[in-house]
Image (cartoon, rainbow, N blue to C red):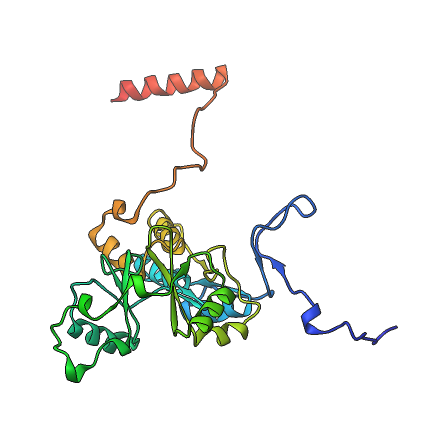
Length: 294
């Protein structure tokens, strides 16, 4: 009946899933879809990294504007890809030979009280321990005390495999009465962190658009002027293998090798030109005339 809606017609029963790329309907599944039919324009006044994160939370895709330097656009992409709701790439990391003074400086800079201690001081180094605010007291400890002497060592940490889902991570956090859970790979390298406080906010965004690595999906604009430099940098940043600060370093040093392997060329290229006998004769005659003039 016109104008009639049954009790089954509710938001949770409606799918707004929308293809983002061309595909052969009925013959294959769409390789890339949105959970809501919404994208943002490739404009400086519209699409930056914060818009990309906000739109991906709702299930859409933002295309970061290309009218900026390669390093700035790649850094924006990297920030979006590293902002996984509930799965946080650690931005507070130190080596074991750092000091309490370094911890305090880092805390003031990032505003985060949980610091990962890795063998190389990076977000994806081998996890050796964690420093939380409960591990030190400024009034009773020297600021030049090495981190290795007061951190919670790896052997005493509760950790989980990198493939752990957010719900599983949350269950581990609550069962063990901890505030944070490091996720590591088989070689003990830190992949990301899950915090107790982030789980509730994740439940509010049930349509968020994530890739297979649990990172937000984001697009980026390019041009015909510097695409040869821009595309590899964007791909590298989007693959999650490059922290935002590394993009600037690589481009300033002008060493493409520092960014990792480049994909082999698979595009169109000129292989052979076939001429008819008449065209071949004309071409040869033109070459002879040119040679005589020279």
